[in-house]
Length: 543
Image 1 (cartoon, rainbow, N blue to C red):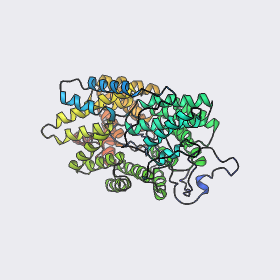
Image 2 (image 1 turned 45 degrees about the vertical axis):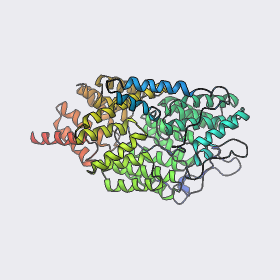
Image 3 (image 1 turned 135 degrees about the vertical axis):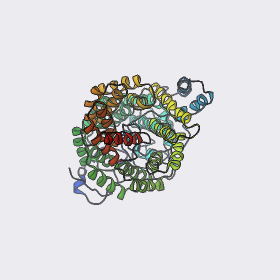
């Protein structure tokens, strides 16, 4: 499908149903102008662990204190203490190694460590306006998903909790609370919210069986936990009830992408674009095309979306997506320009800060890159930026840098323990980090487990690399080929394939793919790019 455009008519945020008396929503191809500024959404699909991940969707209330769980139905009360103890205990076990100060640092990070999610699997509603928090409920007393997205997430949740204590049979309020808990888990790094989300969504369905908002919320929750078959099933059930449910349409695309069903994902993106054109759909539409090697279409769609985005959260999200697309192509000046625009809209937007730091590193500004990544991991210590910072320390090689790098990799282990305690599947992240900086056997076990669940290009690359570091290159090669088979332009995948080909004796293939990686993105990894240049030089010397 060719790139389409749409005007900036706002979408209905309080109800995903198509109007029953008016015309059906126009397709993007029938409308004029730029992409609508809607709910910022998009999934974090950079499975190489150190590059390429799309930014998490905009989320409200990132800095506000987390309210205590509601006591509206009895199920939500008194959960926080036990979960906090469990998180701190998991952190301390992961930090076992003899450095007391590191254990204290890890324990201090406990509430920041977030479950790896498909960023954007939760489309809470419209983009933030950056203004006032939610200080009142709607006329009916409950908040809609759009109200939550436009204001302060924590204040919105508090209002919902108060409302549901007074009106516990409001199934719409329960479904909105469930989705808000999933979003809060993402923005706060608090996996304890997932069980609360599950209970709230189940309560909504008990009160109103088959309601599409709760089913779509269950889809988002499953995707956040990396249960992509479950996410697809829940999304399909929601769409059977309401074909226009935006959250379900978007989560369905995410699930198909993560399962490696790219043709189906492209069809799902076309369907979503026809039914609910807007920023959440456009960003997914662009990513599906990027995965198939169609960078031009991906860029065009994102540029049109950015051109009409007005909410700061939408501007930050789409500009960051453009920055990451440019970075993947080695276009560092362009990438820095997009990150600057994102940060002008939201100067605390962590995906933009991370992307800018990676681009600075690739451009040779190591000092700025280290400072930028240190800022990111201090607030959100996730595996990708932790590994990137550790590798920058290793590459710099100053006194104490090796120990600093080790500390970052130890935090990845701690994050894994916390995420698993929250019910999330972390095998892909574990495989990627452990292959280069941890237990190689565990990397292979995790990669195989993930491949058994889904056959995406990212899981193929992870399994190929895990097999390689365990000395099983003949087995690795078919997976490395599969990782690069869709045309996705990812320098890490090309580098991994080149290294594996060299190990199997295919020097011609190794030269081709190592050169392709460096031609595409010469600064794709502080350590990997250096090793690729060394290997390519050795291969050229053997000719």
